[in-house]
Length: 152
Image 1 (cartoon, rainbow, N blue to C red):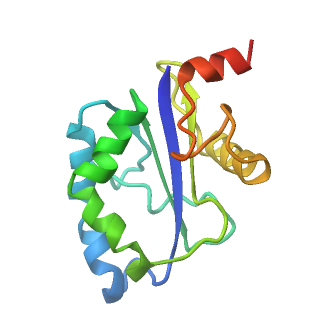
Image 2 (image 1 turned 60 degrees about the vertical axis):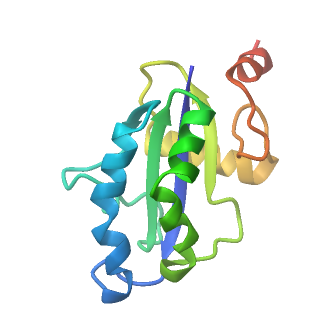
């Protein structure tokens, strides 16, 4: 099994705005870093090379990021032990605080490419039910084996 993730952010500014330019200018390098990271499998993108133009919510200021990794550890290594960490630390400069869960993790079969609709369903499930093997956060880190066992 592989680990899928969705995270969402509500931009404080238009993506063309100078206030968010540094974030936008670093999308390509950070996405390239993800693709070169150990354990990376896939990421959501459109013809521009990122997912910022993909509208998944009625609020056009909410941007989405989705990817698939071979393990929780691989995703954590990318998020917290690479240059990506520097942008996480600065997210309050560019994005509003979302009071509900703004990311979700879930297990998918190998070779499965999750859809945005599937990801939103997982996020909604997490928000309504808390961490379970079906949809969870880093607080729980349910294993693929726990997911399989919960569906047996």
